Image 1: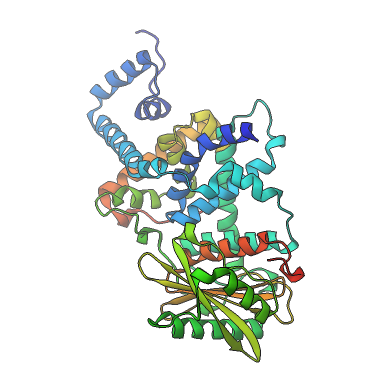
Image 2: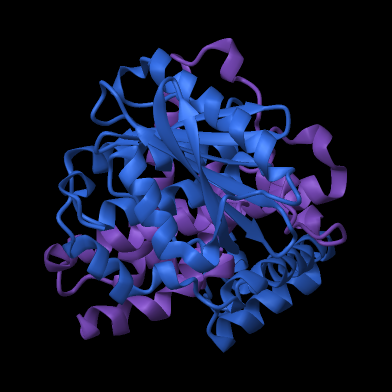
Length: 269
Length: 169
């Protein structure tokens, strides 16, 4: 007898992880030779450990998205935050995780869960406009993207709020132009984007009416998904023929870009 | 700022991998990582000097993940029936390769605690002490839980779905 400590499950686990000092590793190996059934289990566990590492390796090998660059995150944190921002961020986080994990991906969040009829109507109009114009091949827009500055100025003036045409290049969508639309006696702006696959996305913006700010609201009609929200007195609806999980980061990017423009109500472009 | 970036950024690939393994959705996983990094940046000053950066980051990320699950649960009670559609199953991700998917299905058969432990130790190469810190459990519990998690995964892979329940904790 050498008086060596008996083999335990901690030894076996450390053996599976390849973390035993060589002497102890030898002891485990000798032990397993005497216990072939256990040895079989251990070798299976080693194989599964490898399989899991291999399966997940692609993720760590990917280039890091620029939104995760620390410098970008720190720059974003220095921007003055608004009261609603945390609420929207929380709603987003919850929505994401809810949508992915779940048993029940709900679509209704913060701010007491009350739905505004007005917001619903704006979303209806935006989705209708989306359906009509994205399928238009000859004249999808009134003013094409090569006159973007003019387009933005014109729509801002008509809508009565300072707008931007958000840059959705990181999301794979480029601006193709925009148009002016009537909505309940008011003017609404419709920006249209297209990705490399020819899938089109619209951003609808209208003066927001009574509410100053709401959180994100999701709805889907047939194959079309839409996120809508009100911020700084503007109603926004982003609509596309994609899954919610794909549309959400786009809505979030738009929200952030409008927020980054400061206070649109003061007329800064 | 450069110091923060030079310390944080090398950790991002591992955080993205852990987040993706938990969520199986590219955007949701990166959102979780972004939340983690934002929190780490805003609390950088409160980080204890002797503290282990890697364990600290994984702790933040796992807690944010769990908070998200909890919030989904409590708010889920207030959600009407009409909202109970449009659910994406984790396995439905376009990133899942048919031939290699089994081991992830096996992972899904574990409790969140087992799953996280297996990922942190087996994939992210955290030491047992670091894993104990992240999960807030004693070292001895780490070893026995690891043992159970691996046994369960192995049984699942042998016997298929029938013996294992999917649990989200």
